[in-house]
Image 1 (cartoon, rainbow, N blue to C red):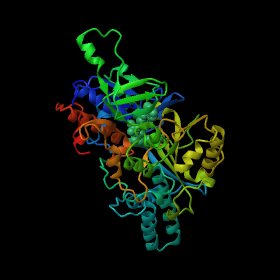
Image 2: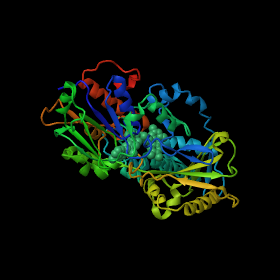
Image 3: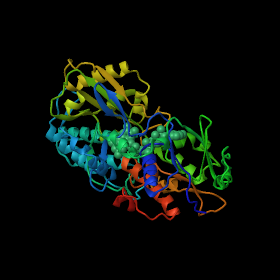
Image 4: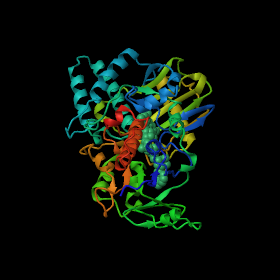
Length: 497
Ligand SMILES: Cc1cc2nc3c(=O)[nH]c(=O)nc-3n(C[C@H](O)[C@H](O)[C@H](O)COP(=O)(O)OP(=O)(O)OC[C@H]3O[C@@H](n4cnc5c(N)ncnc54)[C@H](O)[C@@H]3O)c2cc1C
């Protein structure tokens, strides 16, 4: 069965698709084609220009900045990590229009983080329930009424920031057991302005003619017998053999193009699978896979880039957090009527010499969905009034330019990253990752394979998760063809995931 030169198609040129294609090439597969729907590669590792700077509209943190992380290793090897600036200081402001004591806020924030970063194991509880209960315990142990209120408000800030990390609207919807299989590779490192360059690293040495842009795949017909049309110049014996070559998979593009393959690796996001899985695959996906696609959640966040003529924050500041003094941890969920209350976190793009004066505001879940429907003027005015209230003075200018991400409306992504709702075990991601085999040689005939962050219970929602999922599927095909040579790029972590 193992064909000598199988034809492999990868759907999607995000990090998962590119890393799968790159590793397949390293294994010696030489008939690999990547089909990408949009006009550029990288998927959720993306950038745009604002002023004179190139900013990351997608991922910008290495979650786990250590040698265990292949993304960290790739960026380090390319010398990019030498450009990472210091993080800057943290500033906290109150809705009463004054600065909050940073020492107190940082201490309280760390206490809140220690509670919220709890890794539940088969508890069946929500993160919201856990957080409300444990923070209440801390509050109850305090004597001073003012201190109770101040702690509550910082705990609420921690909860709101967590909504951004998850991409959700309500911590009560998020499973406390979300990270029970997670591989923690270390602290996070902000690589703003550098992450998007990972795409160039993955593309290096990859033959450009194997990457087809603006090829939206609309159907994946599998478990079939599709014949390539005989070549009009087929005279030789080899060519006549080629005449009879049949393929089990036929990939149909929106433009009508059909590409035949022995194997297809599908790397489209969970958001796209939710929208399209029922029509994309012919025959349909097995029921258990469809159920998983339905059960998993695909969140959203908005990054709002605000470019100013002059900085109104202090030079050394790296992050600005806005605290509502009457917020409580028990009520961490969004409210579209008061959407601006979920614009509590801003990061400063540093260094100033590279970026100028740019703040990035972050919003989670349905607030991000709402922001996608707003005009730049509406957003600019609302954000400016908001900042004036917290900074306590009216001379905060409107930004000279504003740009907000629109990941939910992006037809080829439909959100930002996967999260686990209460009652769903991360193991369902293994079901999503299971390849589909043809009915003629069940157990042998790998036809449709799946990669992408949502297929990685150990690292979902991350760039390294996407990258390693691509490696996993390349390894699966290599094992299938008994290719034992280990590609040079294989990292030790590939073995663990
Ligand atoms: C705003 C934002 C911030 C993030 N922050 C971080 C962070 O700081 N750190 C971190 O580690 N991770 C972060 N992530 C998550 C990380 O970016 C993703 O986990 C990872 O990039 C996903 O890669 P992927 O290859 O699985 O999917 P994608 O990047 O979604 O790639 C899928 C590709 O398939 C293409 N496609 C879709 N449909 C079709 C079709 N029908 N035919 C052909 N092609 C198709 C898409 O255009 C896309 O290029 C962030 C994501 C976002 C959006």
